[in-house]
Image 1 (spheres, protein in one colour):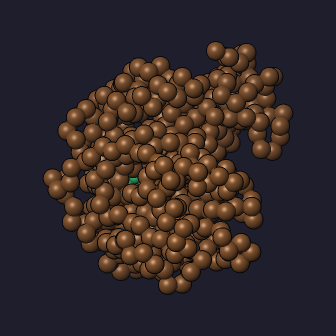
Image 2 (cartoon, rainbow, N blue to C red):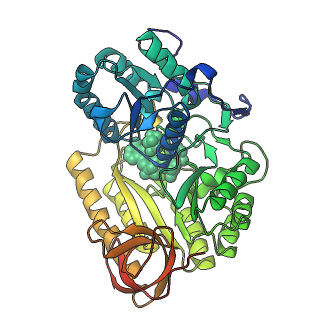
Length: 481
Ligand code: SAH
Ligand code: SF4
Ligand code: F3S
């Protein structure tokens, strides 16, 4: 095995400071010898985790297409299988470990199959060690900072028939000019920044994704303009912490980026994820001022108890969160707000959990992703005793979910009899006479209509509500440019 790698080190990652590393902008290119490597070969990518991984898989697909590979959807047909993995909670890792075992048989059937693991698990010391020791079927492991090196790595793996591992802990680069194969035809992800510097005490992301680095605004705007020219209707600006955009380079910030993105004239702009700490009034103003910035904000709170928030390292109190929340709902009255909540953080008492429930009562969120705390090796919280019994965690999760569903339904009631504009995704999965899409406030809408196509913007009258969707019928002819 080629030893051109170093295990990722959580300790090293924790030491980084802003001043130490200069963000470099570098351009991607495929070496001449790698250009035809994929001719006659097929690939398949399994993507786990969040939108950052979805977007990375689009880049990986773009690189493979440029190397002559063709995509396929049957594992048995593939010459190259990539697992783009997630490490956020233990169950995310367990899924991948299960898949590694299940795919072993394919290697027996096709010894030339190249089996690659990338994404966030590939940045974790213990996971890389586990794969090296216990999963000889894995030929190639590469980290989230090494995607642009895929052509060289595949050449190495294919030619040497040796295991190839490359994981940089070095993380100062922003690579531009990467090819991309978009998986959607009218909605696209646009990275605005990589990494995270928040170091919430429970979270693995600052280690797996590295330090926060923002892309040049000119590169982002050029990507949005190109998408618009290609007929895309909606972009989602992506970052772990979009409100911190630009802070690493001291230039324009997220409010400016929002305004400039809106001025490209693309129909819809979304963004995720927001962190309360960096959310300024100027950003609220920008969202309120442009019709093409969608009134829908994902604003994770994690807990309603200031004591737990402090232990989580979230940098805001319950009161500060609520102040921001009410400011948003006041300035953008129709804004949908969703959140993330963790239950069973170390030492979370019944009273502290009750504070979370009362915060949900006050905010009446449009929806929430709720999680049971999962210790992640190397994070500060993992050193605290995971001391809330599992049955208590399960009960709290259930109680919280019931409340979240109650308010999701209550918030949706306001839509009954109203008309919403929907970006059509296509016929619904259950019934091809019914179409589905998302409203401006990011509500899933199922509706009956005449001749509509994916990417059309249509007006729908809401006739029935559910907790997680709205039903209705189209009332105006589709806009067809
Ligand atoms: N950058 C985003 C979220 C990234 S992870 C943010 O800060 O909001 C998505 C969600 O997973 C988090 O908001 C959190 O609620 C949850 N999460 C992260 N680490 C976790 C852990 N160790 N255990 C349980 N849930 C976790
Ligand atoms: Fe994780 Fe916190 Fe960064 Fe979100 S802001 S990715 S929860 S460290
Ligand atoms: Fe998972 Fe990595 Fe995203 S850990 S949630 S894929 S940033």
